Image (cartoon, rainbow, N blue to C red; front, side):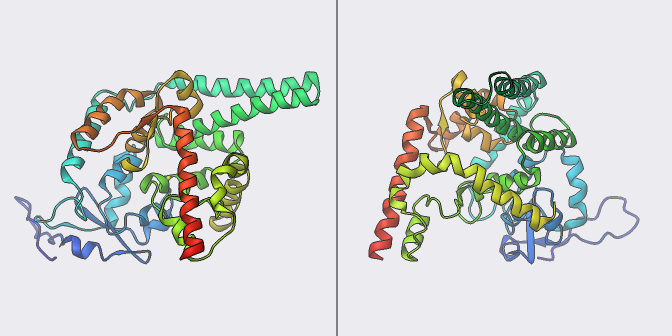
Length: 379
């Protein structure tokens, strides 16, 4: 710390040397009241800025004391614009002898990934097909209109209600995928247009909060499937996931539900209650509080026209989490290159049939439930 920077040639005035820091020092600044992070070897103090960050303070906090270069480039499409906000936060840079990555990360994998992203850019895979998304919106609006016309013309009998409900449910699922595209800034070049369209789709077609979604979903993408950091694995005591959480619940004798049967009640209370109750609860709490997101932990579902449409192209889970701003209709094009990268570094690339993936979810829930029961009874 304290090593000086180089004086520019021909400078008429002596420039103040920019401080340099070692990772040992940077990693100490990892609490909410003192947060530093590194982007492109520059060190920034984001403590005060975090509360004003459009993506929420938590997503920044997840990278406190760490290198955030790849996350920074993945989440922002207009680097010149966001760079203006970084300049006042600059406190120094990494010492020349320090590696660009922190905590023993594999530098070769990171270099290969950045080369892959450059290849994707050269292939124009981050360029959106606006007609594709316009047709998505059109088919959503058509389904909404058909459902209401059915009720209008045929009344609200059981059969018409069931048919209209099925169509509306399908429309709402597809609306969820479309707002997901807009929230990831993958439709338009300008962030402002994506944000405006996102507010319309999620606010007027889904009845939810765009701010809530941004704060929650970007945390998921920053630290996917990591407990206490990824809100998508916090199931509000309805489910226990993985191996660590069920054992902790069992040791603490927490039994909000019979978790050893969660693989049986998942389809009964999971899809019907997760979004309408749990997510709406979080939306309301977000509005009140604020007055107004890992390769080895995921897998793909094989590509087909139905799977692509049914899942909003999130059957390409691996590619989407590597390139969150890539328009979904291009994910299948980058998939072979991602497979090659994984094969080169011995990383398992999983791709399953849809039914197999659903069955694996049930098996995983049963395994976690059994771990909880064993810890609950014997530890």
